[in-house]
Image (cartoon, rainbow, N blue to C red; front, side):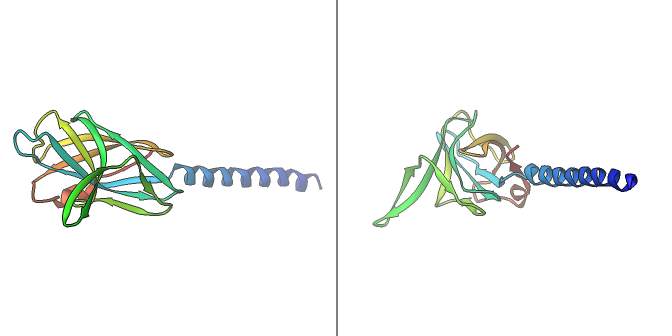
Length: 163
């Protein structure tokens, strides 16, 4: 009878340890991942540029509320909107990221506008961009600068996530 009662606490302890390991593994998976970040190279003298990327949300709803980079004076969220055949860019205060959704920032749509570039963006270079989310916090993103005609296959190999 004594041996049997000693096994119960050991089994209970082992069960709690297994639950803790599973909980840690789930908590370690980032809710927000950033994929395929790229910017087109800019011509000499260009004051502005744009960054495009995909945001994959594996968690609850969040909002992209800002961005910053040392490559430009400001990094702003913008959306291109067509009205009466005229394309306009509108500043966004935030970009909703629904639960379990993928949001793509792409040419002709939503993007991170780099305002007041410090230097020309050259193909093959990289710039660091920090995305700021209301819940996930800050995510540092390595942005590949590509040929002005579009992203190369290599631009799709980068993944970033919240710590």
